[in-house]
Length: 451
Image (tube, rainbow, N blue to C red; front, side, top):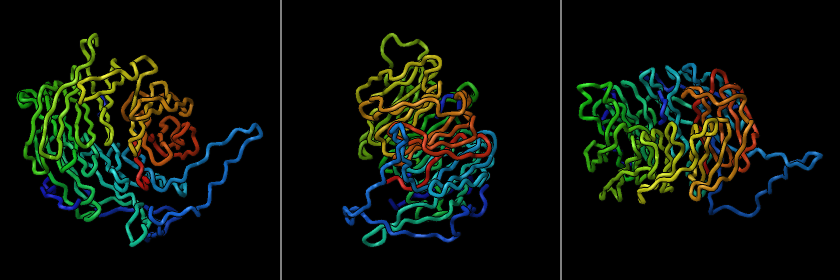
């Protein structure tokens, strides 16, 4: 991590059972030129009513309307749960570039940045992480936007370090925590856009432990606080006991303790929530100058060993989702200090994974029996559900179960047992397309246009 420098960017981006860079590398789809291409895209101000209406979907003799395949511009980065290779699917052309990049080990996480242009892949077992430019984005050009299409590229940014594990993507920044050293790397999306492979992440150190970081707005971050007895017994005290709000230089602005066994983290830009034994802890920053925090306990009568170890949140949604073994999936309201059960932990019908949509309007839940559910993110209303789309049962291992990501109008789900990636339209969750992928496709991220 010596190559990482502390800088300030002036321009203005976990689960219960989770477990040196080269010059820029690119892949080339067979239908693409190695040169970038641009296509003018009208801005909202130029939109007119002259657009050609969509062609109605054909119907079967029984008058059943086949699901229409949404038009999606971008690529999927697909990690192998058994090996170190990552494949790339170009959604527009259907081209699958198998084993396009070697991550060094199987990916612990692959997440796209807020704009959808970049993605980061964490390879914990290789002590490394990687930043990819998805190559598809809109660039302002006078009275219109140019659609840029380039090859997916691996940026030459050194993120090697001692056991990187937790990665979290915020609105403007992303944060990566290194358990082995206690280093925390901050990466600004605007810095990636401007500097590319020359970008130098900011770096602080908070002491080695199994930690976490959540980027907040106003260039602030919530970072886990190490157990004070860690040095005496690192194995017993590996989990932190609270969190601090810090700035990009590591200066502590607020501290909140009392989260025994802290594990699992999420944020919405203003609030960061952490899973604890006995509930969740939160820290909150308003306008970068007013801070507070608190603890939310489950209702009376909850199990004595109640613990939430995985948390999800997204900008624009005030409540959070949190789950734990044996206790189910809960909705947490930090401002009210309450939580309510959404999905009980029932054998075969418990929640395995959750993913908020890219626009924050809904969230998706994969159940232990393979059922996929879609909920309204605000009202918590069940909007759609489907079963039978996977080739086999959902495996319990972190590197074996399906992964999810979204784009406008679609949901992508990896199908490890079927060695494929599925595209489902997001209204009724019907499968509209699939791609065969080598290895055991698990972690996945969409890079491309999100509007």
